[in-house]
Every structure is written in structure tokens, then in C-alpha cells.
Image (cartoon, rainbow, N blue to C red; front, side, top):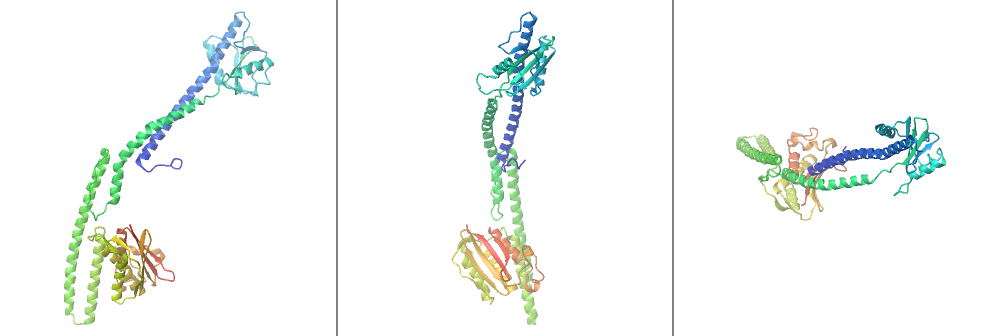
Length: 455
């Protein structure tokens, strides 16, 4: 059904289509009834005059008068004028017989057939051909029409013939019905479309509010309009949004408490390791505590993403990336950055800085160096971090973004991290409306590309 009729997506379109189909079905039924009535009318139009003429002719003969043609259409003929080439008309035969019986007229047999102009010329006599040709003419149409021939065998065995033209189909009925259908479509469908769009407008607003909902902003209650069912849905959505916001607030409070409770013992451990005399053991302990702090920061940042406390500000993206690269250079890491033009964008600088830092940190850890570049066009800005490391198998390029996922063959806990760096970077970039993609680099290595919209 959908292949034959393009099914609309909107509620108003579907309602209009259903009403249109219902109107079409109703008009089709109406056309069938009209055609049936028209067929019955045409049958009566042909058979009733024929039955009256036959009865009149037989009545003339029974009164001792010779058969006089009724306008030249009833004649005595020497034989049955109907040939096998003509098309029998059993319905007309039954109708004429029934009407003659109702009038009390008895005949031996009646045959009715339909003859085309090229069929009734040969078998009839010259007089009969004149009679049929005269009957085939119309007053308002020059086209020859098929002829109905009625052959009557009387009780005494003699034959009588009656010829009459078959009326043409009246195509005006079809055109009138088509005009009526178009008028109905205009009268009914336009109000239906207007009402359906009015009903569906609150649903469209509800869908827009659901798409634009962000945990970072306080929810604005949506106005409850429309029919009672639609108002109930909008009220349920408003209540749901309030509950979600309350749950997220509770989650932020819980995360803050967890972070505080975990950092306090870690700080105490950091103080206590100062009493360890072995410098090597003390350094390893300090590294372990620092790694635990970083892990805790990553987990809390990933859990809080979507409700950042940092507002969007206008910053120079090129300067931001250059500052991150300088931090790695200060630590002695071989990280290069191609100078780029100033690019003012509205974003959350701390989060974007962290995403870029995670990508560069991965490149330094697993490749020993990183090459950073920034390119822009009219729509997007792209930050590319390239390395010449072992790379990532193509079937796992998307899987490495999953939290706590690590490639054991090349990236393990000895090289640092628990598999949250890329997951956090992707979450930050997607929260900013961008995307992050990993691709294999020509000649070996990996390309990590952050794409951010400029508007």
C-alpha cells in the first residue's frame, strides 16, 4: 500500500489521506450504484418501447387490420433476421418477454441480438436494411450506433422484426461525478487539514521541546494546549522533565560527596608516604596516588558531563590548542603544532582543552610524539592529532571509545590509563555538538580528528 500511495509522516497528512481515501471509496460506491441505475434505465429505454410496439402490432392484426409500422420499425419478415454473427441479449429478451406477459400478449418466441453496422447489412433484405439504417440514425449524433434487433415468432409461425438504435453511453455522468468528487475534496479536505494541523501543533511543540531538552538548563514547563489527550501527554512530559532534573541534581550532589570522600584519604596517603625512606618506593607510591586522582577525575567528569558547571564563552580555538601543546612541550614531550589563524568560537574551554589533551596524551604514550594541526571552513573547525604509533585495528576504531576498554596487545596499565581518556574526549566533543573520529594514517599511525561546528 505504501509503495502505491506515498504515506505522509505528519498527523495532519495522515488524517487528510484517510479522509481522501474514505471519500474516494464512497464516490466509487456511488459510481457503481449510478452505473447500475443507468444500465437499468438503458435497458428499460430499449425494451419498453419495443414491447409496446410489438403489442400494438399484434393487436392490429388480431383486430383484422394489417400490421402498420410504428414509425416504420415493425415489419413482417419472411424469416428470423438474427444471424449467429450478432451478439445475443438475454437480459433484453427476458425483459421484453416479462413486459409482454404483463400486458397479456402471447408469442411463440422472441430473440434479441445486438448488431454492429457491418453485421446487419448482409443478412437483411433491402427493405430491412433501410429500416435498420433509419433506426441507427440519431438526431444529435452523427456517429452510427449499434442496433438492437428484436425477432418475434408469432403463434402462427410467422416472423415480425423490430429494429432500434442502442443509445450511446453518456460520458457526462462520469464528468459530473468527477467534478462532484473534486468539490467534495475541496470542501472536506481543506477543513480537515486545518483542524489536523491545529490538533498536531501541540504535539510538534512537544517533540521540539523533547529534542531541545538539555540537563544543563533549567526546564521550562511546556504550555498544555490541544485536546484532553494531548494535554495529558504534555503534562506527563513536564512532570517527567522535572523528575529527570531532580534525579540529575541528586546525582551531582552524590558525585560531589564521593569525590570529597575519596580525595580526603588520598591526600592523607600523599602526606604519609613522605615518611617512607626509600626514594624509589616513595616515588612509585606518589605515582600510584596521582594515577588514582586522575582516574577519579576522569570518572567524575564523565559522570557529570551533560550538566557542566562551566558556561560557554567566546575563546580563540587556535590559542587554546596551542596552550595545550605548550603544556606538553614544557614537560619535554615532542609535540608540534602548525600555526593557525585566530578562530573565535563559543565553547566550554576547560572541557575542550581536556579532550584535546587526552588525544595528545594518547599519541605521546603510544607513539612517542604527536603532530597537531587546526583547519577550518565555513561550517566546521577540525583539530587533528596525528601520530606514527602502532595504530588501532580497523574493526576496533569505534570500540576504543567505550568506557574502560583497552587494547591489551598495545595499551595496558603499564602505559597508563584505565580506558576512560577516549570515552571522555568523545563525550565532551559530542556535548559541544561535534564529533570525534579515529582513522588510520597513511604510512602507519593514527589520525584523531575533532570536528566542531562553527555556528
